[in-house]
Image 1 (cartoon, rainbow, N blue to C red):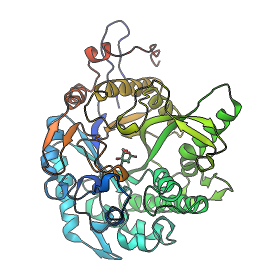
Image 2 (image 1 turned 120 degrees about the horizontal axis):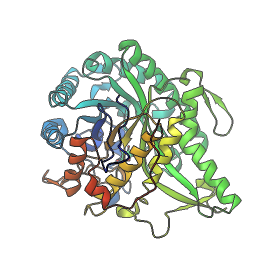
Image 3 (image 1 turned 90 degrees about the horizontal axis):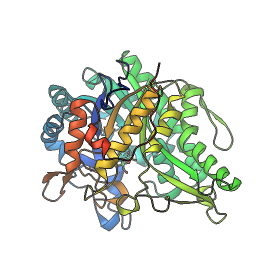
Image 4 (image 1 turned 180 degrees about the vertical axis):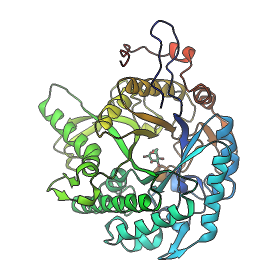
Length: 447
Ligand code: BGC
């Protein structure tokens, strides 16, 4: 990596190092279509689970025709893409490996490479094969071994095409939404189960980490963590500070701490020694922040009432406050773990593309500042290339740089796709676009 370059005397734009990865992120179930062998497919068919009764259905039709979108990525100067492979396609039942599905993933990954797009591959992005879900999903005692077998199959079949792996996407979201709020399968269970699921996911990650390294010594293996800001609603209130601080520690950092030192500190300590030291990089998924106010009526959210900053810009459907500085803050904390960082997701639902151009510039300014302050950030994957199936929110939230109509499969680029393309092409932020944004005090250059 080249050192970050900025001239203090000339108005040259914030520039990112050579080799920086610029791309978008997607996940199998959200774009492939017809993933009928996983737990979400079944979940979507239960009444009341998904907004307006939507279903993933054909999604973005990638299983048949991803290459057309790969062409779009290349035309938009993206040099990397984060995607996931679908366990339920590759292992249709215990030990029933599907070589045809593997061949299709080989074709897709080759197609990315031929277009100069480096793949980062996630093994688990929220979906379980039905046969794993039937055995208990995150709570299945043999999950770590089964997941490691899947990792071995993936490395053996795809390892010549991939060297950047993410084991699990957002285990904190999977556990909180799966076992506490119930918005994701299995639809609830309570605190004890949530903690057991988190522990088992740590074991599964650790087993996959080792397996990938055995099969592919040069692989770089990490995990994508959802890092969310929780700030006290009334900074002078000790209780607000306490509740926001505990939420921050439990939701954001307890899991990464366990991957560093092998102890999960949420309630009674649980030792997971095999998890210690199993991160070659941290994937940071950053979207937004909540203000947190102590309220004894909100036991399920650790006695905090959560809301956005009054007056702040909010993305579609009340998804979240737009808070770019939060990216700098989470990157600085993630940096303390001492491994390189990729921003593996960052984006917003904004169907009319009113906020997205400013969102892009402001967040990338913060990323650049983080780098200037010493964070080893090596890539940025915007969520997402095209509108895709947004889990419990169905098709109601539109995250794409390119609008996509799931009925007709029509693609219509939003104007922010052109802006992002310009950023990717130059590996720098266009001065004119920055000039139009609010200005924050400059960070002194690194010696
Ligand atoms: C998930 C994505 C999701 C995105 C937007 C992330 O938490 O990894 O699958 O679509 O957020 O909500």
